Length: 180
Image (cartoon, rainbow, N blue to C red):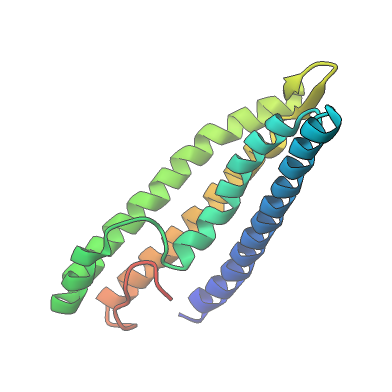
């Protein structure tokens, strides 16, 4: 149980840092778009690559902030049924939570298995996005962030599943899915 608390704290710190970095990227994207639009309309000189960078950054921000969304209990889902079930029958609610959390962890693992070979190929072969002689950016950071974000999200799902198991064993009180 103590090891789970230590893991929870370490994972929580990493997830909060990931979310914070994603928020900084949102701020940077906003500045880039404003600068591009200003340059385009006031000086007829847009910033090359803004569209490509914003496109990539939206995906990067998504995968940096999904673990925090899950951890804070704000993942899009219908809690009405599960919440009532937890009140009426915590054991069944925790079994259902365990199934959902295990499925989420498996989904993250599948995405990671797809992202890793693509990241490796992009790293090894030097794949890039953009237009040659206008703007290019390496593709591997995007693919690595997808892998990293899914890893953090998967670990958070595993931690939530472990809490369901502990609640089923009576080692900790039942908790709502995804809440702290």
